[in-house]
Image (cartoon, rainbow, N blue to C red; front, top):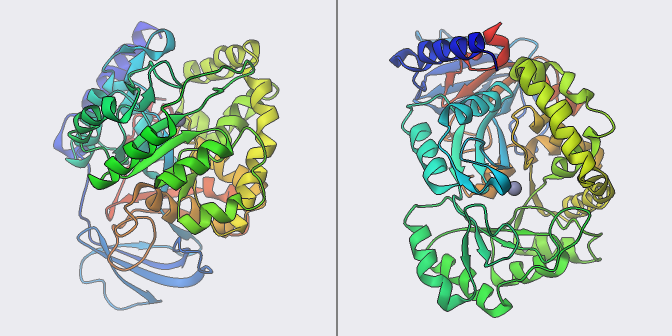
Length: 452
Ligand SMILES: [Zn+2]
């Protein structure tokens, strides 16, 4: 990054983000008229609807209402589509760690904020950070909920729970060997009020060279999950294979951070997941994007990416990261894994299991690629919208107040110019992003297009 750019960014940052004018707007009153409503519950689109927002909550939904607005802000939605704000149920906010293996702690909140703005720009109004450094992510969560930064809602796990020397053990994870060893460590994690606690249980690990990683013994693991439950903390888990997934579900986890990805799941697995009401983060794009970039990096040329990322960031992703994934064999391995992931997701969906859209990536616009992969798996566009909104709220456990356009819920919504229920690629046609009934000024977000 050259000096001029650094200076420019710094000035922009101060101008945009310091004054009260740029604090997170909250609790708006609003009327959106004459719009096609896709409410996120899976219901068919309803044309010519009016949606009223009072104090940041959806207060009334009626057929076309032309009565005087009583002085509240009115958006004319003619020819447009209203969907709930998108929710990414699996991401990791950059800015909290760095160095080899991400083992060093940093607090680069400017980087984090920029990424969060990229998510908002892409229509994402809530994210679940699925593993990060405690000090960093809880500070960002606090700043977001207090309205000190403009951000999607942040839900977070903080430190992962891993076996000593096990999968993802060493980038700020809390490691334990047994229930006795782990209990007090879980107590310390509970003190941070994680929105969910995330465990890892993966013997092989990611990538072309399989490992033989240790696991917390089955019984101890089950006790730890029960202990979290008894303390009112919901749990999710990174698994790779069906055996680990079944054990985790039997132990009582609320969610899986990935579908089974090492192989096709057996007959009956999808039904087992559905029966237990366990929510699964889709994360097809983890495999899809890393696999694809080696052969074709043109997805970074889509307007949502070029508007969000600087030329430098685009080059980093298109060349540096691409080369790293290609030379390590990760791209090829991920391409090999993707078909089973898509088949497993389709089976889960057909069996009535709850899938939540999640990218396991670091770039906001990628949610739209994840949604396209879900459609490619054979899930209808209307259902993909539910996966990307209401089911995200179910993953995090906040579906009582978020995730769909229903009376009483927080008014997090996105207005699109094209119909996403006929072609999911139309989810990219974002016109307005609304959080808590207040419109986000997309022209003031810290994204590349606003620096030109
Ligand atoms: Zn992840």
